[in-house]
Length: 377
Image (cartoon, rainbow, N blue to C red; front, side, top):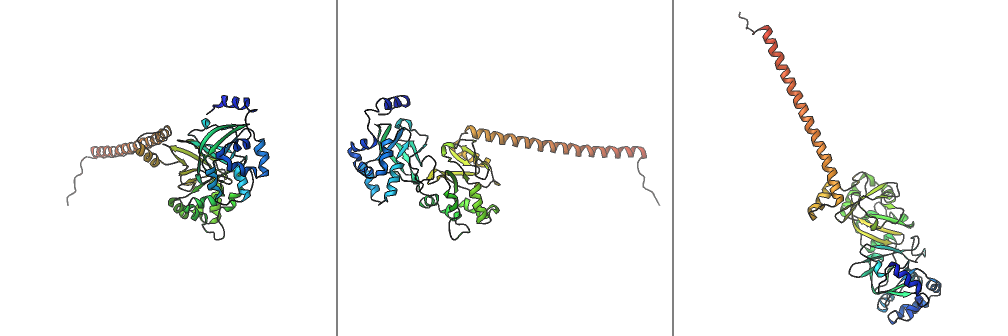
C-alpha cells in the first residue's frame, strides 16, 4: 500500500502506538528471519534501531542476505552495512520516481564514510523502485511501505554495497584511461591519492583516449605537479554535486575558484567541453562523474557549434537551450558577414573613386596642353 505525503504522515503518527519497532517488524516476517538474527547479535545496533525515528529501513530478504554472507565480511563491515540500510527520512515507494534522489543514511563511521550526515543511497524508479549503492549496483523493492514505529520498512532483493574509496572504485569499474592518467609521472603511489581523503567531494574523472591524448599534449599537464594541481583545482568541487544539479546553464564552482558551465543538449550533459559518460558514482568521500575529456579551461568553456549540430542531426530537433545557442551563434555570424560585406563595398567604392579621379585629372591636362606632337629631327 502506498501513502502519499500528508496522509502518510498522519497515518504513521496516528498508529504509532500499534506499530512495531524495526526489530519487531523483522522478527515477525519469515522472509527476514536471517537479517533479524544477525542484527540482534550486534549490541551496538540495539540503540539506533530501537530509537530510530523518521526513518526508512531497507531490509534484504533471506535469499539476498545468504548471497552476501558468502563473501565472509568482518563484523565491523557488517555493522556498517546494517547502518547503511537505515535511511534518514520517511520515503514511501510513491515518493520515489524517475528523477533520482540521493538519500542520507545513518552510516557515519569514519572508517567507511567521509560524507556529512551519512553516506548516500540513490533512489529512483523505472519499472520497479530501485535503491543504488556502490559501483552503480541496484536493489529492487520486493515489498514496500511496511509501517513501523516512526518510519517504514521496504524489503529488497540485494544487500546494499558500501561505496569504497575513489581509486578502488575507479579500478573496479575498469577506468583504464583514468588509471593511466592518474599514474602519470608517478611510480610509488597514485597521483590523486592525497586528494581523496577529504570529505564531501565531487570529482569529474576523465576516462577516454581523447582525454589521455589531450593531457599528454597539453602544457597544462607538463608534469605530475601540474596534473595534481589540475585535479585539485579544476576537476573537484568542495560539495556534493549529483546529476540532479546538471541543469542547462548551471554554474559549478571548482576548488580552484574556476566556474564550469553545465550544458544539456537533447539529454546529453556537458561540463564545459567534456561530455558526461557516467553519472553519480558513489565513493567513500562523495561522488564522481566520468567525462570524456579533461576540463582544460584554455580550450572551451561550453560545447562548440559542431556539438550542437551533431546533436540536432541525431535527433532532428532543437531543445530550448540549443535554440538559444544556435541563435546566438547565427546572430554573431550574421553580424560578421555584414561587417565583411560593408568593408568590401567600402574599399571597392573607394578604389573605384580614386581610379575615376585619376582619369578625370588626366583628361583635364590633355584639354589644357593639347595633343602631344612628336618632335622631328
